[in-house]
Length: 333
Image (cartoon, rainbow, N blue to C red; front, top):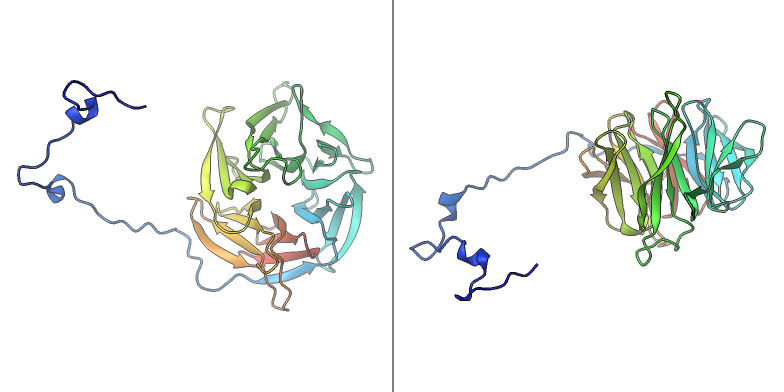
């Protein structure tokens, strides 16, 4: 807000400003001393790059969202066919578990082992019981239909978090109308509750993951090329801020949180000459490493990375390449 000047021509702020030093310059060295502090991350990532390997191939050119099921097995989804696919890591073979009948872009299981699917085609979060076809779990908030849920995740308490972005291009910088929702797990006789954490204000929110202790929830806002962090204070009241601003590529597509608090973030791009990369972010929000997704056998990921998940023993992350249909593994322990 501008400040009006008085009769002397000075603004109120300038009247109270400190006058210049009698010697014609400020002696800043006597007013305050500046100490340069070099803040380094507590993580020593070393100079060696993590080991990258091909875990499976031929999974389809729209493969995305690797996730661990209730038995500890690895699964992916194919957004073009609607398939949920189980991957046998010992053999690299894949088998279809079920089909959503839509365009799934994310899936996860809750602490009880029940599967939920974020499906852009159905514009709904689906639930799938073993042996049954997926059915709509929720598709609107109050009287507002979802644009198309993108990714779903659970915290240790069973609270579900999901992003609602619609297909790429529907909620970009020119129309930042994407959302993040939470569905609290039922407890003490109370029913589960759906509530928005960020309502119709984000530019293509996609990947979402909760910290192992449930303290924070991280969301990839792809078209702003940044990671958002949500926290509760007090319990049940969520706040959001920018946790890490990235650069290069289109933006982050998925995120996984390691037990030590590091974030592993896949970067999505459309440049055919760019290599696939995973950005590692410290618990303090500092980028500490970039991993080029290229295996020792010469197989390299394209820049269209579409998902990431921790292995059941937390020693690796698995990354999907939506262009080649390859599932990569990266050792992180």
